[in-house]
Amino acid sequence: MPVPLASYTSRLPLKLPSPSNIYTRVHPTSHRPQQSTAQHSDEPDKRLQRTDRRHTLHFTGRSDRRMAPVVERAPFLPTGEATLRPSFVRDEDERPKVAHDRFSDEVPVISLHGIDDARRTEIRDRVAAACEGWGIFQVVDHGVDAALIAEMARLSRDFFALPAEDKLRYDMSGGKKGGFIVSSHLQGETVQDWREIVTYFSYPVKARDYGRWPDKPAGWRAVVEQYSERLMALSCKLLGVLSEAMGLETEALSKACVDMDQKVVVNFYPKCPQPDLTLGLKRHTDPGTITLLLQDLVGGLQATRDGGNTWITVQPIAGAFVVNLGDHGHYLSNGRFKNADHQAVVNGESSRLSIATFQNPAPDAKVWPLAVREGEDTILEEPITFTEMYRRKMARDLELAKRKKQAKADQLKQQLQQEAAPAAAPTKPLNQILA
Image 1 (cartoon, rainbow, N blue to C red):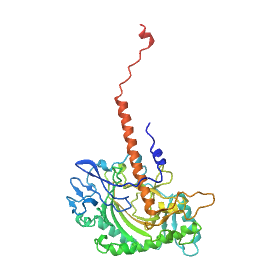
Image 2 (image 1 turned 60 degrees about the horizontal axis):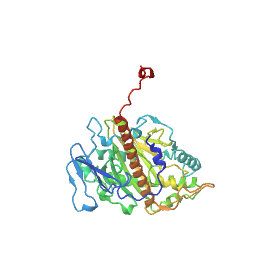
Image 3 (image 1 turned 90 degrees about the vertical axis):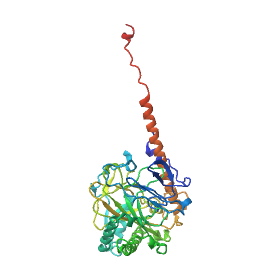
Image 4 (image 1 turned 135 degrees about the vertical axis):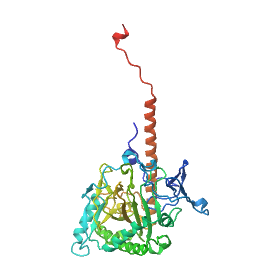
């Protein structure tokens, strides 16, 4: 019997050798993988190749950095085809179990009105309970201007409607910090996500590279800058409430991030010909401290809190932010607060837009529980940096992908052996043998 996937996951060690390469790219005429140095989908991809129906886009890596990229045709998702290509088809156990528009109200919705005065204690308790139960909740009455939110969403959609050449001016392959990219996948995997992305590295401010911020549509840079600042303030306010819930000073979680990093990722999920076979974004937890997600009303964000046995589709609320706690926040709380386990599904009727703002610690920030309750052990063996924490996460994901691939190969081999085995000769009854 093949070993269940859960058994592989449970046996993965916390510390693994550092993988030299994370992502892969596949040439349409040669199916041998070519190694790349890109990182997780929440990080900048350093070398990817993507294909459209007939052509290929190549980017140079570290060893041939002097060579110019060779562009044969724009690398976008094959949305005009009637069936999904194999590179997007997921295994049955990874496919959507709940429709994109079968909404649930299980995820708490919390009004932040009064967070700085009379209602602070109530809000703190509700946020803490949501993080203990789900690691995910929605906030309304958050103070971010509705006109700014609407303008950010409008300009984001306008960008994805631009001609290919305008988007490709900001292609972020080859190690560029920010810009446009299409899909991605781990080296140990062959399945791609059904999405297009624009990434802004927005904090620390001194590290901003405005040359990587698209200048089309007109005015988008200025709007992103305002949006980024407002969400940084909102994130810090939420981290303050969580700090207090842990019995710490209000600034404890923000200080643990040292010089807080922020990245704004705009996700565009086009209509999909066979949405039941693929995902817009595979199941994962965010590596950082906290994530604020703005989504349109189409629906597609899904969450689980029982290890993937059951999923719900989060009810979209106009102007609300979905708040996910990440791995870093999970560790700082010593596991008291869950890191939200989630994915994005797609549909065949309409495209979907979401804007994720990731709040991460500085690369050298120490990862270690800030509050350990009486009778608890620490969930980490030793203090590590966020860079090391992230490396281990990627190593585990890579190891899991390899083990799952091997389990599939073993299962197929066993099936072929059973089919090839000669059928046993029928046994005659004793009276026929003696006749």
